[in-house]
Length: 118
Image (cartoon, rainbow, N blue to C red):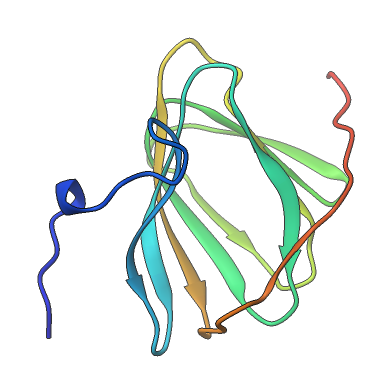
């Protein structure tokens, strides 16, 4: 058992990116934040599914050939092997809780992806 406060951890890129609160042994859990105009590299996971629960702001997420506009309260499920790309096109900070399972030490594959404007 453990209790971890989000403020005890740091975002990967200082003011944005993922912040892991738990890594393994059965899943990863954390929060992700994107400042207005920021994006997160397109990638997929070979084994893990990834889930997002939107807490603040708005998110445009590209999953394979579909684009979804997400708002607070939305839940996004991404199956393994589905390329996903996140971008904050809004004027406010975007923040979501995320979970990856089943735990794999290395399961992220970055891809070259050129989003198109809609």
